[in-house]
Image 1 (cartoon, helix red, strand yellow):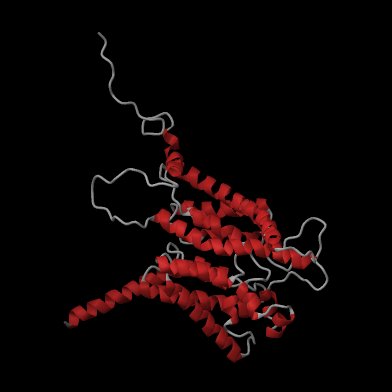
Image 2: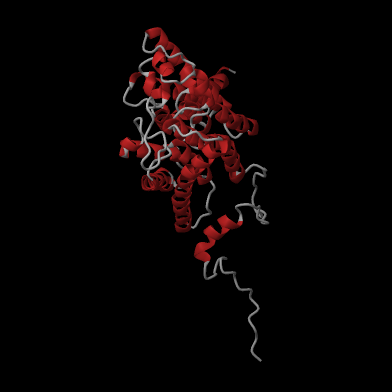
Length: 382
């Protein structure tokens, strides 16, 4: 009598199964909204309720207020620019329909590359792009062509993350790298007065509306900003033209409170960035470089958004506690330096963060070396 083979056969997506090569993709979908029932069996492991997935979700939730306000503001700026009166819901609906395609493209292209890279490397799909995909549509003009956005996202994910090993191995913020690619490759779609307000085919701006952001007037002085109709409250509330999610300091501060309360982002970087910007802004006032009050620098452009959500990226920022103070201070200071002395590029936050991303490891190196040197001196004198 022939003996039956009682060896259990592997599942389709288990090792040895026919579709094993898709296990990374299946595992990513299987564990997206639940915790798998697997436990560690060997070795020592850190057991903590906070893992990468939870950290990413907290950041996404912190971005929701800025995203929702940005959608409303897109519709509101469209109403002001065209002279069409619209209510709260109508403005939000218009903005939602404009911003949603940006999210679809950002996630489809970015996650597609993430999944493909994980399959090729035979690794798990990391959740790091959940935040990058949420950030990218918030830091670009609402009418940026979708094909341009797709190319920029592909460049940022491939050359900003995957070539270095994926999530946790990159030294540049992928979302900012995407914006930098757009800015230098397609400058006409990322600067000027025509790109910040969404218009349908055949629509034009009404008389007296330029579409320029407050930073476009900053080089002309405080009077020019005020004459353009931008009060300090407008800048703080966010009812001004700009990138989708960068205008409302109130919405950004709500997200900052969540990040600080949960310990996800470093308050040291935020505080020191504000300090660096205020110092350079104050020095600019003393030297006569500008009559814009130093505190205006905190509520104009993308300073608040960059400080809260991008400078604090735990992967690309400084890791040492002292290094965080230095890193944040230099981010804020460089941002205002670019604003004051480079009229061709009114917004300096992107360049400041990317530059300091590059120098963050060097800052940590010198901070660590100094700490070791002090410790050795104490040992020798003991």
